[in-house]
Amino acid sequence: MKPIASLSLDLDNKWSYMKTHGDAGWESFPTYLDTVVPRSLKFLRERNLKITYFIVGQDADLEKNHDAIKQISDANHEIGNHSFRHEPWLHLYSKAELREEFEKTENALEKVTGQITKGFRGPGYSLSPTVLEVLAERNYEYDCSTLPTYIAPLARAYYFFKSPEMSAEEKEKRKKLFGKFSDGFQSLKPYKWQIGEKTLTEIPVTTLPLFKTPIHASYVIYLSTFSKTLAKMYWRTAVEMCKMTGTQLSLLLHPLDFLSGEDAPELKFFPAMNLAVEKKLEFVSEILETLTGKFEVVNMRKHADFVGREENLPARKYLEKSFESRL
Image 1 (spheres, rainbow, N blue to C red):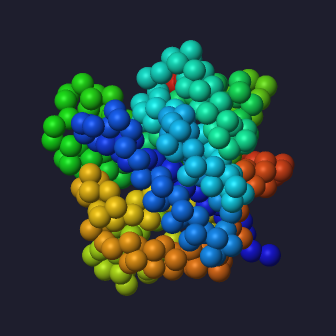
Image 2: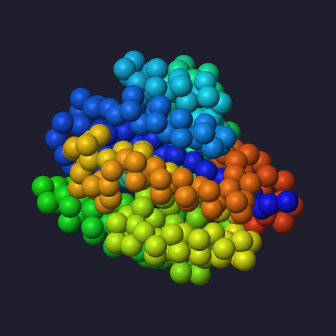
Image 3: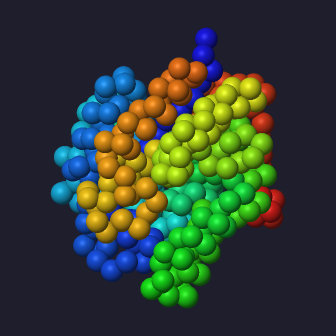
């Protein structure tokens, strides 16, 4: 039997990218969901893949997005919680603010999709002991907010470089965006957070074993703008290294993997947005063909259920001091 792997898509909307980037106009919540949702669903249907879409509660709360979001649930994909306001500084939230954030998101998603969310991914991989406490309180089954990579500070520096109008106050909020260098020392393999008497399965976003450089689709597509051949080689090497090390690969997709600058002119500053949609989809297709050839690909909840049955799954406490030392 093939080893298991999971596939998910963080459905960050146009306004959430603009907000994180500090751009004006996000307050009207401009959307591209009517474009990216049908396009991604068609792409997945043609490959017989069922995945997890992590959806922002604010989008589900707006009637203009209901049809697009309902299409996801109607196609039998899992719905996950990606916060309500999509602010990558959840570590600054109080427990009361987090409870409100989760409740509003859960209610909005259940109203549109009929699904009760059991999984969470923090925007910008934002996580804290308080977030874990609230997840446990609300009976979540899994989290997948960790990104074990050493290059997070470089990604953040690039983001700030592309955001020259951002104020010092806004930069302060984003000072942990994408994480810290020490995140690279985190495990690539699933484990359980021990939160009092409760446990929560953690499935990290997979990075290249040993080297811990990103391998999610957006990063590989970006590499292809320099050399498609080398990008393919990098991805195939990553898949083989995951198999060799027993790493259950969890691959992350983003809406921009299915869009070009013509679809969202406000986001042309993002890497690889100069590529035509057809070229992007062709490359994502090759990525998934390699993945499905080596792994059995499931959604995040099925992945969490699978690893949750392992008797020797490592458990970690979420104490503030030890948690912060890892972050």
